[in-house]
Amino acid sequence: MLKREIEAVIEHSCIRLKKVAAPPVRYWLLVYVNGMDEGDHEVQRALEAAESYPPRVRLLRLLKEDGTWPISKQRKKAEDSGLGPPYGWTYITMIRNLYWLHEYLATPEDGHVGNALEKILSWQNDEGYIEGPIPDRIPRTYYNGLAMSIFRMFGMPLSDRRVHRLFNWMMEMQRHDGGWNIPYIQDVKYLPQYRYMRMNTFLDLVRRGDVPYDPKAFDSIPSCYWCTVGVITGMAWSPDNPRVGEIRRGGEFVLDGFFKKNHHSFHRSERHWEELRYPAYFGSGYWALDSLLYLGFRAGDPRIDRLIEWLVHQRMKDGFWYHKERPHELHDQWITVTVLMILRYYSNML
Image (cartoon, rainbow, N blue to C red; front, side, top):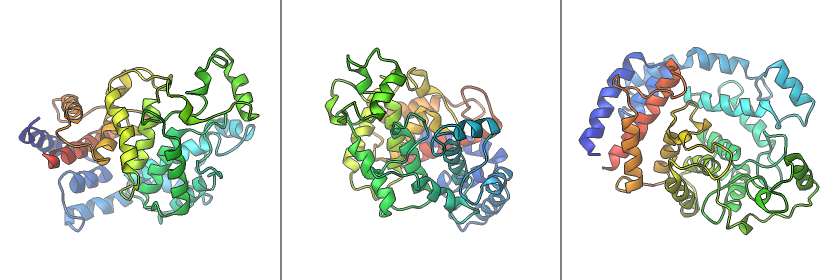
């Protein structure tokens, strides 16, 4: 698309969104779409309003000193009867709420946000990955990518020894095609001797150490698109990334798989690419596109250009992009401002 067409879309949607935007949405719109300076009076007013924004106030009020949020009695009972945190809903809730608090412009100094980051890092094992949240104890590259993005969103540098260990573990898990998957479940389980085995029986063998594993040994089995998106999202927040060429291989894998069915059961349907969701980490093509642009994929790449054109065509006549599963007043604002930031970043390349 031509630059003037992109700019016209941005201008019209900015006008419509600004009329109704919640304070933190307004901040992201003013600074990262309209390019206004942090010291601008209107930006400062948005920041001040964001501090008293009810969803932010509530999340900070409920955040406990140990860095966790309360969960339902039913989920707490299930956690306590099993392995306990980080295996279960406590960790999932922390990832979700920290994501939101970053959107709401919170910092590690607000409330116990710093303690929440430290709590997640306390679950890092000797290999470098963050354990949980699935009770089978198989490491999830997807969740580790989300954890990495959370650390980087809140300003934790790659020079932090713990963050760097997580980074190294994820790089060690990169596969032959540039992507990532769930170890054991999305590679070893496809071998003839395990293919028809009940999952619980297979996982028992894994836990006993009876299943040899080398992530480089499964060239015939493709990686998982959505595990890869989770990882490159974490890496996209790392401007000091020393291995950007290797991460771009993951981006190539995602770009070449856009709008295709996943090779594995995790978000298998191709419809997941086209569904606009919030929070975006539930799996959505615009979230993947955002990460790809920050990894250095540029305008002029026909694959990127095609995705931008697709994204523009998802816009409704009122200038908004809407949650595909069901409209939601606030979620639709977040989706719209995120898309506008993508379009602005792309337009600046033209």
